[in-house]
Amino acid sequence: MKYSLFILPAIAAATAINFNNPQRLEIREKVATDRFRIFSDDEPVLPHNVQPYGNTDVLKRDKVEAYGSSKRNDSSDSLDPERFEKPSPISEFCKENDHFIENSGDMYNLQAQCDTILGNLHFKDYNDALIDFGKLRSVQGSIFIENCSALVKIEGHKLERIRQTFSLRSLTSLVSIDLSSLKDVRVINWKVLPILNEALISNEVNGLSSLTISDTALPIIEGFKNVEDVDVFEINNNRYLESVKANIKHVRQKLSVHANARETELEMPRLISAENITVRDTSSVYFPKLEEVGSSLEFIQNHFTELRISSLKTVGGTLGIIDNGNLKLANFNNVTDIQGGLMVANNTRLEKIDFFSKLRQIGGAIYFEGKFNDTDFPQLKLVKGSAFVKTNSGSMDCSKWTTPKSGRSIVRGGKISCISGRRQKAQSVSQDGSVLSETDSEYDDTSEFGNDNAGSGSFAGKAQSGSTIKKTPSILWILTASLIGALGHYFS
Ligand SMILES: *[C@@H]1O[C@H](CO)[C@@H](O)[C@H](O)[C@H]1NC(C)=O
Ligand SMILES: *[C@@H]1O[C@H](CO)[C@@H](O)[C@H](O)[C@H]1NC(C)=O
Ligand SMILES: *[C@@H]1O[C@H](CO)[C@@H](O)[C@H](O)[C@H]1NC(C)=O
Ligand SMILES: *[C@@H]1O[C@H](CO)[C@@H](O)[C@H](O)[C@H]1NC(C)=O
Ligand SMILES: *[C@@H]1O[C@H](CO)[C@@H](O)[C@H](O)[C@H]1NC(C)=O
Ligand SMILES: *[C@@H]1O[C@H](CO)[C@@H](O)[C@H](O)[C@H]1NC(C)=O
Image (tube, rainbow, N blue to C red):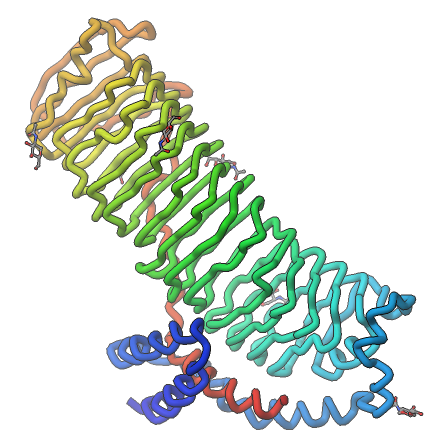
């Protein structure tokens, strides 16, 4: 319990900081639960994590020297913002392809000389606690900040544009990002920022084509109101994440939200199409306008009780609804065509698989497993792959699948297997749907369903847990939250 001395003042400080800011209000509430977690956590807190405290004095001293030695001069009046309104010729220095920034003095010099830089900014071996972009307005290349273990805060009130990539990686002390003018950035790629709990960029941000936020302490990710079309939208391993909201309409490649907090709610009220969607470990999903998924659509190990994707019409690949232990009500009633397989497995509270009332065709195989006691596909005319239906409920009637009304099976992939309780019915069918052979037997647990039909929908990579949350003791960000208060005074 030797950390309690630090924790209590830290909570007081964090609470004070939080008072006026609704976004931070979330964080304040977090403090209480985190504290609870710390006390109940058996894991020792690594000494390494206390580092920000130990460093404070050193950081302050470095700061003084850095600013003292830089060209802070009254002639900096000539760098008056108005000067930058007029287009001025860009100096050779500002045109260099790459700038390597090692300390706050370098950054100070750069922003004093350049309103715009044409190349990239790299923060290498940067030992200070603050990156302040100062008067810099525009970076035509990228900004890369990596492995700066002393870095606590990134700010830049004038920075409006990062033409290419804004990459942050392995910044273990970073708590806050304040770039409230940033409204034009192409790629946001933030990974391993384990105590980052606040990041402000302009709500008007434009031109974003790829967003990756992984392993942060952000409680909320939202506000992309002008972003309609992206290639990648990927949010994972953010263990305090409560809410993800975006107005994106089209995701050209990958939409993936997984391994965040159990409470994570995902809302994309305008989403119309996406190439691939993977949603894991969320507590709710809101895709009211989703019509088309180009390739695969997966909902795995979520905690929601309802899943309504009722405007969805087509899925170009496999649709998987797997291991969602609370799911009771699903609605995919506008889906007409699934070009890959359909897998509905181990959603243990789902009583019926009857939420595909318009589905006509499945291009791959069917795999249903669970405790359901009925399946109902009133419009289904063709399953190109095989069918495997297995339920613990002995009351499911397998003849629906093995004794088709028309005499011909809708399953054309060679094999039908239906297990209900201890009874198993299996059939081989030809490509035109006629039944070649049939068995009805006691179910033997050791027999496996082989996906042995060439090209007829495999379910590779199914329900493995994607939870790779790194367990970083949460004491770290609480300590740094109070540290920020102190540093804030210092830098202003
Ligand atoms: C400070 O300003 C004076 C004149 O205003 C100038 O001569 C001097 O070179 C400046 N010093 C630096 C370090 O820029
Ligand atoms: C950052 O640190 C990781 C691990 O220590 C290392 O693999 C990587 O090359 C480093 N990157 C830079 C730019 O120093
Ligand atoms: C979409 O998912 C499929 C199957 O997992 C994969 O083969 C394909 O490369 C993915 N496409 C994109 C654009 O990520
Ligand atoms: C289902 O599709 C029909 C016709 O395409 C449409 O009128 C209806 O609004 C859709 N239902 C939902 C919930 O989107
Ligand atoms: C299936 O289960 C539900 C709820 O447990 C029950 O109401 C229904 O009668 C069952 N149907 C069959 C065919 O056993
Ligand atoms: C469903 O659960 C059973 C029993 O836990 C497991 O053997 C099977 O692999 C699971 N199926 C899927 C698709 O996750």
